[in-house]
Length: 194
Ligand code: TMP
Image (cartoon, rainbow, N blue to C red):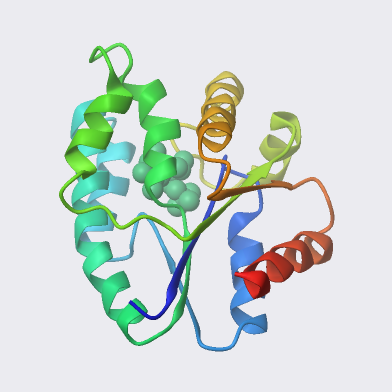
């Protein structure tokens, strides 16, 4: 595949979406995409979350949405595009580990096993890290998901940091408390190098 898959990860309110939109304008030949997607599959994940469905149901819907999304991503990569993806597999690991832990024994292994036949590994992943209080403030009054509670997001951010520490080659940890211009420039430089 000629293109590159670059993913953006972090807790809700970490500013990923703003930065992805800035980078999309800065980088020629880029495509912006995100998960959950805006297809009926992605919308069904959001519906399941709004309706408080079982954690396993929600996890399986995220994975179904990703399986279809990857087919789309592969097409863009074959066309040589720089795919900027707002949330991807690391969101599932960081969030669903917390959500599934009372339900199954080793949620991380379960998630990785299901992904095994279809996952496309990102070339580079930015992890946006910031104090959870700042993230909560940024979320403000916008409609909250079931995950947007301080203690939950604290654990999710810890999970993210552990994932990044185990895969130092793929991850760049970004201080998301900086101005959006600084964060965007830092990401841009790393992408250029790639
Ligand atoms: P969004 O606010 O970025 O659209 O994401 C919706 C929520 O879904 C957010 O709280 C993160 C969560 N999420 C997961 O729990 N697992 C996943 O695999 C993805 C992609 C998102």
